[in-house]
Length: 316
Ligand SMILES: NC(=O)c1ccc[n+]([C@@H]2O[C@H](COP(=O)([O-])OP(=O)(O)OC[C@H]3O[C@@H](n4cnc5c(N)ncnc54)[C@H](O)[C@@H]3O)[C@@H](O)[C@H]2O)c1
Image (cartoon, rainbow, N blue to C red; front, side):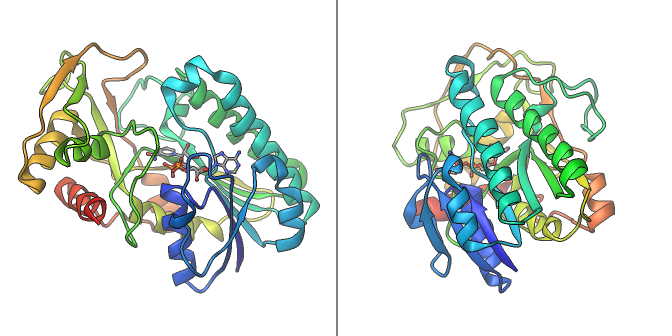
């Protein structure tokens, strides 16, 4: 299939691009390199440096049969203090992309949504029919795009899938997390191990969990990538499906730190800070829907294995 990957120079988009190429697809990456890296675009993919806002000529030229849309701003803290960047990139940028798709007669899309669309959960594991009450601008913009896809499916026969990722981690094809501003726990802990940071901050040790630290669901980027390939052909025209993607097991911040110490054999000095506003005690996915509909099963459920893959790639 001829596929356009928006945001394919980023962490997840580059891994999925490599998987698409391995599957024999023809791939063009569109990315403005605002947070991505040109050298992360797998060789074999065509690369066009452009913004979502200027995607129309690119789509007119490439004429993709499907779009995988990873391009976004995704720092929760920044979204609270500079919301205009998030509404502009994530919402206006996506609207421009959908209009470019319509003009190029491409109506198949898989979108990177997020667990942040749910906000503070009433029940864990979180199912797709849980209330969506985002507690930050980032989550609100992603939820707006989910709504946009529902409208485009209904009005213009788009075949759309929103994949609501929980915490993505690990590495594949030699591609790992290299966010310019790193906010994710595993890469931060590995930066401490590598001597690039002095310590790691645990935000709150007084949550109602067994060890007092927050619990999150870590999904290996390779499992996530498998889900994208399945989602690519799943919906019929006029359908918008929403699937959660997590491995279904929660690990506490403390358990992650312990796994990093065990895998790397290095100490991870920590400092305990205040809770962050809007950080729920537990976020764990129910991925029953995608398992049942598409036969997706995560292969990497062992935390140490996820950390090991991230560590080995970070060292290279
Ligand atoms: N990493 C996670 O744990 C996680 C969890 C939930 C959802 N997500 C979502 O998954 C997607 C990918 O995340 P990631 O961790 O790979 O992030 P990333 O920052 O590594 O990748 C995003 C890519 O999009 C590009 N981009 C940003 N704005 C653009 C624009 N206006 N035009 C063109 N390109 C643009 C960036 O340059 C970057 O290469 C994002 O949409 C993110 O919100 C990620």
